[in-house]
Image 1 (cartoon, rainbow, N blue to C red):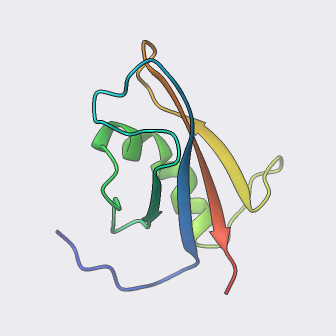
Image 2: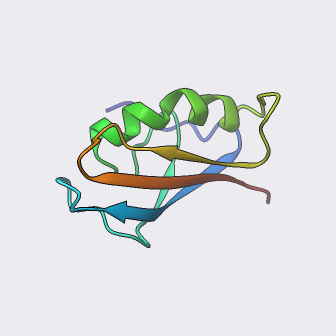
Length: 90
């Protein structure tokens, strides 16, 4: 695994919703510190879903509709998991 060089803005994530049962065992309230080099223990499918937005947020980019936080959904359409990502301003 690549070493996290600590570049960019710190990003946190929290599972804020779950309808069904996550196959990876994630539960509402689970928190992760993630980066482009660190999944933070997050399932690969969910990490893959958040990665494009994570990359933009970590390097201080933005979308026209964006703020310092966003909500993303797991690709598992049977067990709907919702996760919030936000920038940690230090």
